[in-house]
Figure: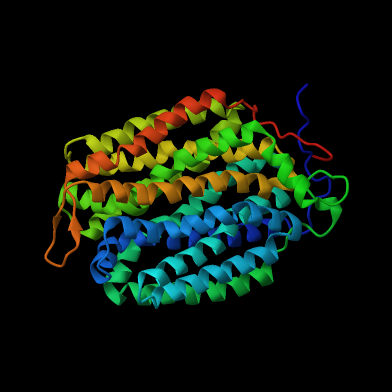
Amino acid sequence: MKPPKIQKAITPHPKPVYGWVIFIISVLFVFYKYILEVSPSIMTKQLMSEFKLDAAVVGHVAASYYYAYTIMQIPGGLLIDTFGPRKTTTVGLLCCALGALLFGYSQNVFLMASSRFLIGIGATFAILNIFKINSNWFPAHKFALLAGLTLTLGILGAVFGQAPLSHLINFIGWRQSFIDLAIFGFIFSAIFFLVVRDKPRHPAYDVTPPTQGKVKLSVALLHTIKRGQTWVLSIYSGLSFAPVLSFAGLWGVAFIEAKYHVDRTTASFLTSLVFIGFAVGAPLFGWYSSFIGKRKPVMFWGTLIAFILLTLAIYLPPIPFFLYAILQFFIGFSISAFLLSFSVIHEINVPLMTATAIAIMNTLNALFGAITDPLIGWFLDLTKHTPLQDGTPTFSLNDYHLSFAIMPLYLLICVILLKFIKETNCIQTVQDKP
């Protein structure tokens, strides 16, 4: 028997636009999160030179964000499901702003890593908040499209964290850039708290089905942990997204500089095309998947094509610049199909526990990100390189080819994992209690 679908609210909300206002404000936090997340990729060489660091240490500094992001996912999901997104997410925004401020004033590796860790704690609530808002304010049949729009608008933060931020850093320096990002974060946290509401105030406008009694933390956690599909989906999602984080988020700029002998701003533009492709593909795949009533075929073909294109981007000899730019765009476009895993994990869990379910998936996303960045840096340090005059190491294309092999391998494993993921037919499972 097919599980019933969530029913839309019978009574139209007196402020139908208000849900979209909250959605846009929540997306702005995702935008802010991505700027902070990918910003180290712009400063890799500067940090290595100023603090006399090797590639592995820079990788660990960048990955400190993911360590915190990983640790806080499940606690963050439980906090949002229990206390609501408004208060918890405001605290998260303040953590991001404070972390950015500390990073701007960092004088040593420990403080840099600590500030990145604090940013990771706060950024935990960005994605969890937006999916909880989507679940609370919009009907279930819009979830996949909204998930795509979330990443489309939010990923623009990653784009802004590449070439435009590179120009800003060149103009005012990386320290002042982070101080300015911190000031924005403090102001935005106040706006978020004043405007956002957890859900419609009157039960008649509530799009989520009723549940029996209060949700207990232990029940919410066990409900998501006991589902095998939750873990298969989470591993698939983590392995799919890690290449985006590592290639476009940290190591890709230096790789393209070595491959095409271009400056950092030009290389940043090329890696930003991965995020732009991702932003274009995410809502299209969300809409198309719901249109055909299937998730798995879209995820399979998107992941397989991404594997092929990323392999070409790494190992092909230099090709005409505009062709490589197109290749970068379609890497992001195709890999964005993995985002449907968020819709699937939402569809197999009780809507009231959306944040907890998403938190488990994001834990694996962050875990693979935290492992992959320093792992690539470690592989690079193992290869032969010639020190520059200032003592900063430089790497050959062959060094990058050997170290980057892990990223296409991740995507190949994802193609295999899809065999074990069950098709939901875009149907939301609804239960009165876990």
